[in-house]
Length: 388
Image (cartoon, rainbow, N blue to C red; front, side, top):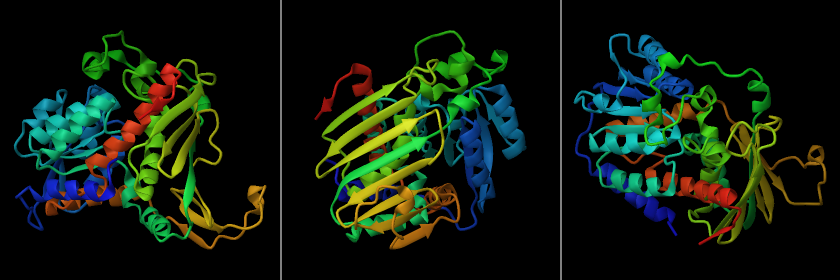
């Protein structure tokens, strides 16, 4: 089992081993690798930060590449091949927003090239990739921040202290969930100009296949490129649970799900997954046919229950049976979030590039939660229960 103290020790060692420290007014020069919707938001945060400069963008889509250059790097350069970006000695770090199957190749190549990395989740596309990228990062001197912004979000930090202080009592069950209405958003078939996309480069290590607009735009729902619910939004909240509970290795993993709402996807559109850890069980429910109640984490403690999400958290004392949510008691603690935690998370990355301190979302816990997601996905695909 990976213990929290070992995670912290390893990540601090990695950061401390790099000798270069930026001057207070020295600009950090950043490049974007994969500049779709999420990466555009991330690069916007970089652009707003003090003493930073976006000097290059890279994407297999000509449209996205040129749009990002015009917006973020009008005096910079645009690239089709990310390796040309990494070959530049004047670039300090990269923001990786490419599809999942590119996260490990780009991250490994970046740290070998001496670049610091902010990479979106999940860190890996397979368990084996996770082992590879963890070794590469820990063997390097680079800062690697994974896009689990909850680790920099003030109210998530406060909620963690609530658990650590024992205010919930022993916790034996944690429920996680996320709901999105893809059924509505995909009523109109996606349209992509294939002539503007280098499909072979998009595929990378994936099996050769003809261009498909749905796979290109909704890649996370196809096994060659993503892992559906579990490697996407679940991994955010699963990481929070492993972080709070200080347990990073499930003993079992299983999943049940279907492709009834969106059969054009390969990954299940509705899924229920469960992981057993020493002392507690974590469950995830996800669906793409409705968005009410968004995403939540519910820690069921013996003395109190805590409901946590990106809007804030509340702690409800244990009492008489409450059968309706509208009848829940007044919370003992209620905290609202004033801003998106991604802002603080990106700033933490940039601060660590300067200071060489360990980032808030280092490599080892990111690999651990990706592994948990991959185990449950494998269990669903094989129709089995994975046991350690």
